[in-house]
Image (cartoon, rainbow, N blue to C red; front, side, top):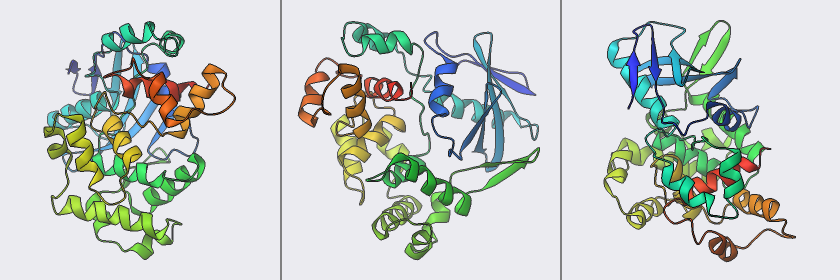
Length: 302
């Protein structure tokens, strides 16, 4: 991690393949988003560091991310924790040179990497948030998924108010482990999704499930099989979580509707490709399927 601590603010120096504006376009894709706010070219994000709520204002100035803390001055360890979170959120550890070399030779990806150069996967560092968001989105449209997330966050998440605006934190697994299925049913979660979400919260509370343990497994198939053992997690959810939270470059949610729509649009197809056809299009994307998918998703927001 490349950063400088100025005490009242920090500067984070991303790799050369980084485009803050492209990342903001992706972050701004829904006006129902409750976990960050974009104002005047900056993104405001509430995080938790050392058990304290920290509001970050993230801007891009002269090749670095400037992170200010509008509410309270932070301790040195809290500033370091904020830098680590933001470094992971923007996936700045990833060297994209190999991806760009591959993509420039690929007829589908070549125009996308030219157009969106510097876009990085916007990650979900918290495993509980990544799993719950993926489960919320199962078999419903994205608009309703955001509605459910907003209700869930505002009902059970912590918040901080600054200058008349409220910023929200995703609910903790500890909090959700203590509620019942009927509590989530009141928010219009299905019974099954309610059971899945509470089950995951309880597994994390009991230390039966953790990001640290999953990351110790280096093999793609091992990690996927561990995720598939969780009730409510199918192949799509496992790959989504591996892509957005566990930073696995080979994660490939091959049955994703958005991925199929992007391919249909870009290739001028009369119908969406099947899963098998999608695998054929992706034959040269080995070890970069996650980034290929993310760039294809980005094309849907033009």
